[in-house]
Amino acid sequence: MLTDTHCHLFYDQLKRDLPGVLKRAKEQGVGRFICVATNIDDSHECLEISKDHDNVYASAGIHPHDAKDAPDNFIDQIYDLMTNDKMVAVGEMGLDYYRNHTKPNIQKTVFRSQMQIAMDIKKPIIFHNRNADKDMISVLNEFPEVNGIAHCFSSTLETAQSFLEQGYYISFSGNLTFKNSHLPDVAKDIPLNRILVETDCPYLSPDPYRGKTNEPGRVRLVAEKLAKIHSLPLEKIVDITSNNATDIFQL
Image (cartoon, rainbow, N blue to C red; front, side, top):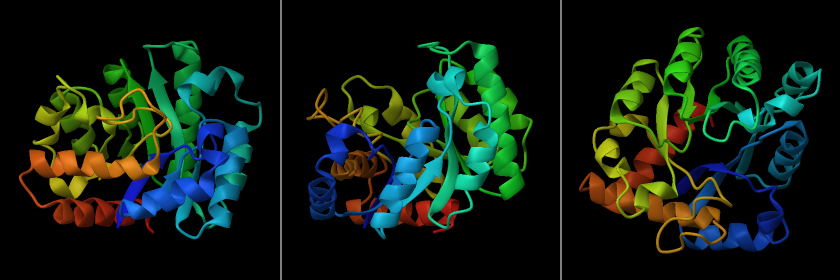
């Protein structure tokens, strides 16, 4: 069974029909889900969803877009949330210099605080990186004991290789399937034991559903694309990526 390592099941488009969303995912061979938070409020929502479904796990963290609005006690709240057994990662955290909804210095401060949490509790991180390769690599280097996932990878092979050298997994989303995407050329050079698949739903629906609300079941299309890139049977990619998810999230 496939593992969608990054989905936002708390968004209204998915939450209002969550039984149907999970049923459709099962029909596509997707049987495990990491519900990833972007702020303190939806960290609690992720946890509640995971408690209601045995095959859903959760994360707690502050997305760079939300960093400017992080409550003063967000560090204590994340520590508290992470004491639950269904919490498997800290994040989504990171840097986004494309949208710049939060000033870069605030992004970096909130990012470093979450890296420290992950280091203290020995949990992996899930990080978001957009137009911030240099600073991202620099901050990750400050915390060599931390590992985790480069979520929805969209950068260069050189950046991917740097993340791999730092011990991170590379996760691909629906943009791997987009016409004229450079990502297939990156993906073919990623070691199979360090590769993951995700949807980032409700965003980034893969072809031929681009522009429509994404669902976890469509992670199968990402896996199918990886199978073509690596000239492997789909079943092999399913096994490899789900085993990798088991390893990094300690499932």
